[in-house]
Length: 323
Image (tube, rainbow, N blue to C red):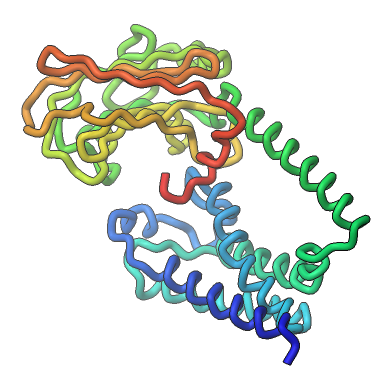
């Protein structure tokens, strides 16, 4: 029996197992958000662009395996669509915290279709002739440089479209809120309302575009939780800038151009930013200055700080499914 079809069947089986394992695992923390996802949406939620990329990559190995197994392309596409439809149905009716949408079905099927088209050519890629190897090397280098350039461009200062909204934890019905209390939030010295349109919205958006923004929030700590949002500045419900809590870590989200395409914003993490016990005043500061993002926490007379200079090599974070 030829080796390629055997490898293809194995890859298709492993790809199917990975799809089922990653898509049917319950995620109760996202139950409220998934319940609000429209079945007909194409790029769903604030990170819909990143989710489309995840879906394509998730179904790609299945498609490659079916192509190597010498399935006709249309049959492989139909199998990918049927599997995706089954997964979406289970997510909609059975699995908690998983959303189902037309966008997921289309992007999953696209991944399977691309993989099935690439599968028959995989042997030539893995064992190319000398001339083909040179062309593959040149193409690979060009593609890598193009990805780095795109990554750098997407990380440039910017913000998503839509009107800005300021919101504090415990002043909003949004789920997964910080368990402590927020007492002040300010952007570059301008106080932000607990819920509503921030003052000087046009000036704030201009500072986002310039990459010069500083956020200060004063809180009283609560019980550490797996995740809790503290303060968010939203553009049409998409977080642009804000602080989150993850255990004793503080997370800073900063605005980038990629938010216009529903990618994930860069996130900076600071360990030990919150005390072990509740009811302790904590001052959080963070922001962006050009390509530098920084985050600091002060409580009990001690200050902790960290910073990161964004570079094209950090572009993967905008697609990070665990971010």
